[in-house]
Length: 114
Image (tube, rainbow, N blue to C red):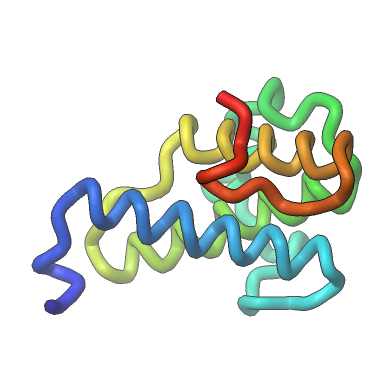
């Protein structure tokens, strides 16, 4: 299967998984992709687009979500696919909040509160 064969649903799932992994790695102090905060342009900054989603996040979590969204958006552009959505950023931010408030484990789809 090539990237052009993916359904919209499969593409969305892939983007979410990739962004989730990037946020986790960043919160663990690793740099999973090249994107750095100083190279995030305004059109790629989820925190500028939807500041309400970032309320209550630590600086580390805020940076991790911003960078993951920007990197995924650039990758989507390169493939001619849709960028991650506001709903995806909201989900990532909520997961980061849960992680900070809980025992430090990252919520998986099976144990995340809805």
